[in-house]
Amino acid sequence: MDILIGLQWGDEGKGKIIDLISRDYDIIARFNGGANAGHSIYHNGKRITLKLLPSGIFYPHIKNIIGTGVVIDPLALQAEVKLLQSIISDTEIINRILISEKAHLVLPTYKYWDMYLEESLQYRTIGTTKNGIAPTYSNKILRQNVRVGDIFSKDFETYVFQILNKQYAELQALGQDMPPVQELYDNFLEACSFFKKLQITDTEISINEALKNNKKVLAEGAQATLLDIDHGTYPYVTSSNTIASAACVGLGVSPKLIDKIYGVTKAYCTRVGNGIFPTEITGSLADELREKGGEFGSNTKRPRRVGWLDLPALKYAVMLNGVTDLVLTKADILNGMSEVPICTAYETDGETRTLAAPKCVDNAPKPIWKFLDGWLSPLGKIDQKAQIPKELKLFISFLEEELNIPIKYLSTGPQREELIILGN
Image (cartoon, rainbow, N blue to C red; front, side, top):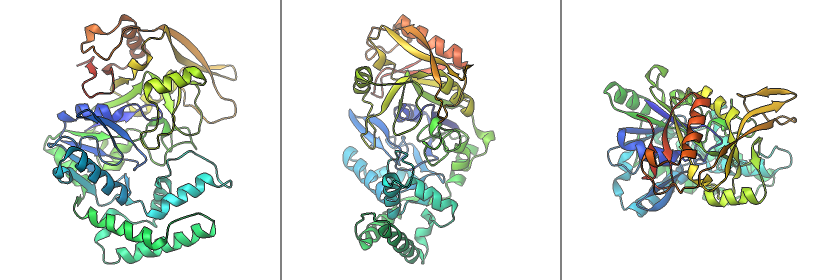
């Protein structure tokens, strides 16, 4: 099994890369997160954002698995499947989807808990997508939630009704605005009935049997390394483990079966929401980079914070994940700059560190900069390694030397075909 993960704060272009290399796999499997993840893919010239479905969904030969580690909003999944069916006129999509019966369900009240926690002055504001992800994982750990397989239980509707009424009363007492509880309940059950049209199974068994039969499996990570609940910039992180080793837990696969680990990084950095961002830039330059790179949330459309490439954090992410192959995206966005800044180290309290985890502390690290020559030639029309501008080749070589890992793919634009293979 191979794994593909993001090495920054998300939005590195993972969806495009997975969509491109999917043709070489038999199974694409999501292992973490929920509908808070937006992977954008250009299909037949249309930009499509996938939130829950794995990025191999456009290939008829691929089985797309939503694994045990994912939290699933039935309404979001139903809407996503129906939207795809209408866009690409493919009614066979549902036959390519397998869902873990052990994956946890996002109940409709959880979104309102998210809203309350984000908007209440009594709680820390994180900047979440308000999709109910954290409350779902919280109730999973408390062992008070329902799972996909429970929809077949004779007590399912009764138990869900009890949970919704209890939480609804609690939220009302806190002053949270909500639609009628019966409306939430009816819409949720209608979406759950849609689930029964899909293949619900022990996906961990399906994946392991596929691997035993020499099928190729790619685990698709949502969010990214620096948003990991344990190893990211806590508390401004997501609610799941996002690093490569989480794929083994979220899919039920032994670490002995892992082969390649692809890590995706932009040529610069972006971040959505609150939290430390050592290389962040502001002002007109940030606005220009944001507009040029289309740096607005795939899900929320919120403008992303932007900054220069952060090597200490990137080295940390490479170490955590055991990356074997790098993918570099958005180099085309930096085209036309006379020089490209890179943070090569942090200086904190007189100490210089070239490998570090960005920490949410009062004394923020001071970036130490290196400036490389920029490239002036547009990248969108090149399709061979020999055509890459000399300055970009030096940029790539510098990263490979610093990270001690080869860059296998260079993305030259948003379209599927805008990619150059640099390594074998």
